Length: 333
Ligand code: NAD
Ligand code: TDX
Image 1 (cartoon, rainbow, N blue to C red):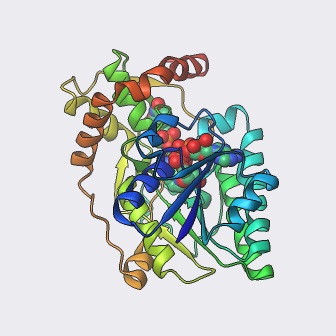
Image 2 (spheres, rainbow, N blue to C red):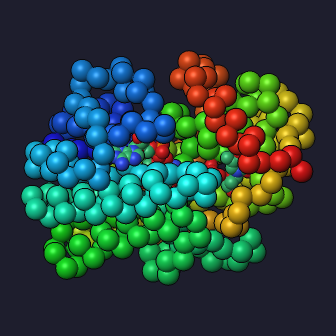
Image 3 (cartoon, rainbow, N blue to C red):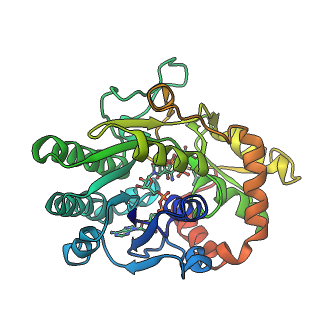
């Protein structure tokens, strides 16, 4: 099977590439990535001779079209992915998440190639902390940020291309991922690398916000499950019952790294900050038989701490720049 992986040099896409190479020798992989600030070329270096890597934009039809024509399947991980950046400058989010997805859709339509579109639970907006509800495939879209609204728009484009043009596509919406190779701008790697750099972790607002954490390997196993067994035209939610509030995440990191649990700062809250996400993955579990394997969050966190401790070369070159951007916009409370 020839698979085109867009965004394959980013966090989840690169993990997808590495695991697929290890577990599916029948798959021939091409990565299309723009290599934005979010990509790290060194992640794919060890497998450079096993895959084809193309540097290019998913919104550029002249690059996308021949690659799609050559593929049996496109898995679209490419996106601008960080909420804080989308608040500072939404333009690249509109361009990549909307125009880029549109460009891919027109190409898979032209060449009759299967697409799997990767999306997020943030398209559903947020839940109150005490709400017993969780998101399901029928929850109404209600995104809050420029990031999540452009992801919601990209999902709606995929659904419309399925219905209007018969494009062979599936969608998955996953909760917050963690694990190796995640950019240090995101909560968990930011705080681990803060501690490793002698900087106090930073918690937005009151820290009571809840995210539904899933290990990136479980996400990617679920993506393959949907590709293998999902029904065309359908959406599957991916989550592993991992709700944890941000204060618990940060204090756990501090404890696991041998620091005092209160050695962090509260900083200015994110504007429009979603309170809680929670996924009900019953459909994926019952219809497609998927089960997550990395469900002990504290031990997954300990492994992730070990990974960032052992891979300082991977993240150190960008750490100071990320912290400088945050320092310009966030005050300690
Ligand atoms: P990331 O920011 O780490 O990686 C994104 C990759 O896409 C980068 O390699 C970047 O260079 C590439 N890219 C950006 N714009 C591009 C363009 N125009 N053309 C080609 N490549 C481009 O993101 P991630 O965390 O790996 O997320 C991957 C996907 O999963 C995204 O669609 C995101 O919305 C979705 N998702 C992420 C999470 C999460 O917790 N990180 C959860 C659910 C869904
Ligand atoms: O320094 C921080 N301190 C803090 O308290 C950072 C970077 C974040 N936070 C909070 C904000 C969120 O409540 O932690 C939570 C997680 O923040 P992010 O890592 O920025 O993730 P989030 O905004 O939840 O979005 C992530 O999950 C869904 C990904 O970035 C998205 O791409 C994905 O769709």
